[in-house]
Image (tube, rainbow, N blue to C red):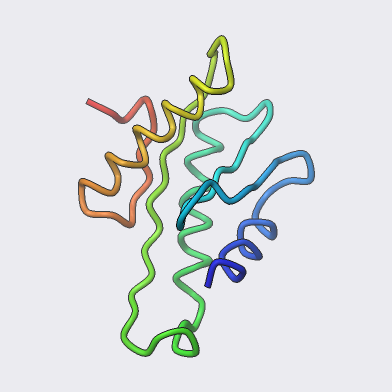
Amino acid sequence: MLARVGSVLRACIRKEDIVARYGGEEFVVILPNASLEVGCQLGERIGAELRKLDWTDVATDMTVTVSAGVAAGPFSEMRELIEAADRCLYEAKRDGRDRVVTTSSRT
């Protein structure tokens, strides 16, 4: 399952973007010089692509959801950017999963 998700991620990103597994079932995608809007659109597109896939070879009664947290700079360190995106991710999970939350959409 993780390999299939990784393949979809690589297919959706630009050549200058970076994708990596970020522990457990999480991935991080770094989009250099991209706006928050571009990050949000990518999160939505990745979710749409993963929902198109047939997962019955992995599990017959499994539902795949994609929750994404998106943050954009300026941040003084990469760690701060990732922490901001991670907070958005956990907000997306807490609010029902299968959604994209950005730093601008947070209340």
